[in-house]
Length: 524
Image (cartoon, rainbow, N blue to C red; front, side, top):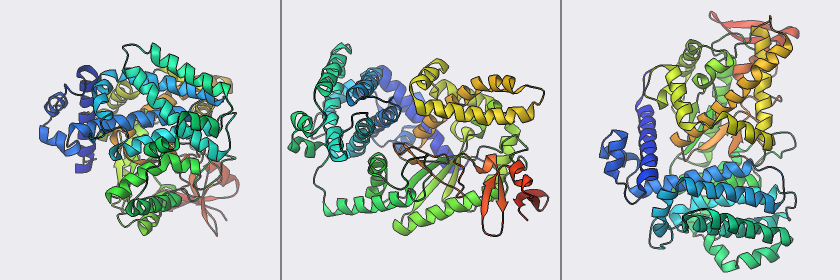
């Protein structure tokens, strides 16, 4: 596949950002120039400035990345009281500051200067503040002693002030002891008093609260917010959710996603959407018709175009969606060859006739041809350790459920591909692979986040209410885990749905061909 101009731009931006982060970590922000970044990235100053016009743009990227990391950490907090969850999240915050101490310490003066574009409470950092506030809303609302919703939102605003204090305490001392002691003192106050507006008023006066998060909005800003909410409402229409989760745009989902939409609307730009999906057909002949895309993929792509049409009806600049194919990320772990991934990708890309839909994969991200080398680069630069993933799975129910779901998929395919194995042998052999698949999935998510830092993240899997992803029901199927690449399109008189091939054939469905390729199954 030819590398297009947009693909080269994504690769260049990734290389520049990685070089900048490494330079800031070793030299600090003030001591690092645009020339230093260009030299480290082995590119020109002009190309660096195309993606990051000033050094401040690198700082905004740091701010936003740390805020996004904090939001993800809030979503993984184990059940507990507000005090317990606040302690856990602030330990993450302290670790973030310690990991980026050189860069953040040199930025501290600008962050406290109201005349600086990097002012922590200024208009340029509004998305960062809103993202952190969303994380704190998740912390409070999902706690075992959460107050009523109005009080919960006010308490989240109060805790925003508290986390600013934790950041300052971490960066102003050479060790984290003082910051961790402050976290414990704040947690003690939360344990001592009933979470209510009484605490909020003690921690945060109304005037300071408005300065942080509720500043007055102009007529133009009110219009930006109204348009952004309507766009989010369209994205959350018929969204794919876990059992018991309300469908549609909820206040918590709005808090997590609205800042990103507002940034695009405020800039008058098309929304940027990313969808990790379309890896390759499953290697299980009981699920699919073969290794190439068929009617299931064709209908899914049609649904994506319809979604873009709906967004364009609300917002004239519309939206652009990038399919982030993870086929090469997982190929050797799920029993698919890299050649099969390439054939699937080429056939799918050839069928794309909507210019608003783009393509991104490992080959786009890394300047190396071999898929094995691309996987190695991904894991070296973006992956957590296996031990840390297993530890998180022990304390994070959602992560444990993801591992179990992947394990089920791998086990189902393993018993078909290797009938000589007993079911217990197949189950044992696929358990460790399930952890590896999740580890690669998280690394891929981190890479996609670095490549498309401002984009809204869609997912073909059902989501909880508090999620950084928006669940997308591609074909209106009721099974929350069926996807076009793990199933076949089944046509009856009234609709097209997805089923496993064996289940459809048990109902009497027959294969229909498009030329010499199997297309779908048709029920009598």
